[in-house]
Length: 128
Image (cartoon, rainbow, N blue to C red; front, top):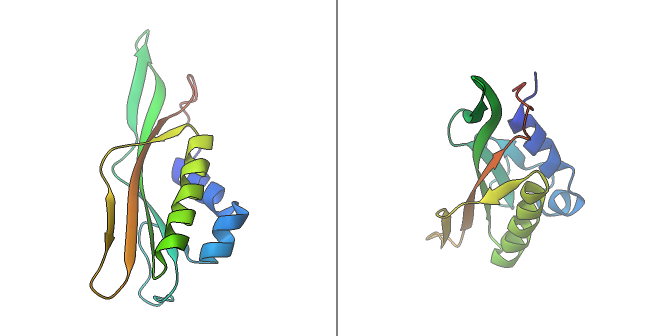
């Protein structure tokens, strides 16, 4: 059985520029309290369980996945560069950016860019 979260997490980790920007601070679900809180980090979070998307002849033909990818850090330009590469990785796996999200500077000079992505599996790819 496939796991789309692991697939997307691995794809983000395999992007050399994202590794240069975030190092080992690429996480699923949440950023650990024990990790470095002074450097750029990336967190990918599902925004719900997979949802059956396309049906035909009483069968499920595709799954739909929705994720939020937060890029946070003290340097706004590096954060924007990282989010650019995240968008390319997600698009390479047929995920489109949704409306909404977050783009702001917090009181302590920390920047946050959170974007939401939605994608469907290829037709007949239902082993998730």
